Image 1 (cartoon, one colour):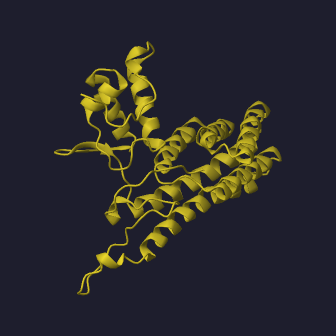
Image 2 (image 1 turned 90 degrees about the horizontal axis):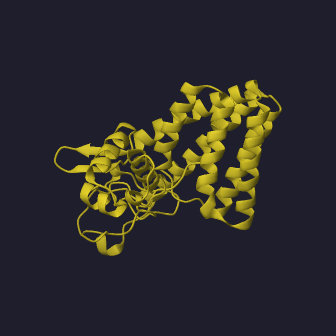
Image 3 (image 1 turned 90 degrees about the vertical axis):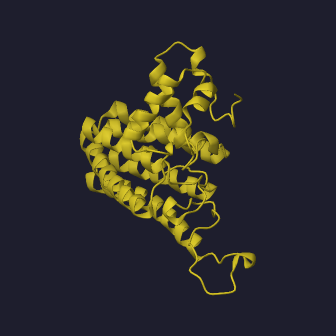
Length: 269
């Protein structure tokens, strides 16, 4: 059977590290970066062929990703990439903002100089990438920034919760515009400055606002989708109730509750 679109960059079966772990990591990355789209079916045989492995590690990876909320498994339809409803999106954004704020507060309190240097290094790379227009590098750098920030909080339980929430929210957002990318990294810099200054309250406020601002951009995108008029050819002669789902405006995808065709997911900073 021929592979369909080549969602994966390497054939894991030709490597020798932990096979199950690699398959899980590769499928997770494909979902979070949009190579596998929201609502897309995950066919074990096809995925196994693309990755160069048997079906067993693919089946195990799907089970693990389902436990993380990245995959939905239905009795008859099988597995597919999860799609959030409006309410789930709002609730997840709110919880992540709350926990990101607490983590930044702890980071300012712990003030681990070695970890702060690591955050500074990532921040410098991200700022340079924005200035040079290397936006393809920013998803990975953003992940590294927030991983280092979680390490600075020095709370393992909180860090694990945040990692799961970051994965879930990464599925919501379309690729940012250059102006939004610049604003995002400026916000990162402000959070780090507050941590370096040991200002717990300011660090917590800035970190929470950072998430809520990105969430507001996403929800505003949904409202814009709902305000778009349907094309003339689609307007019936009699009055009917129309769906708010429409074509993506470049900021967000319409979730499943709007019955829109899933668009490319992106990143939350």
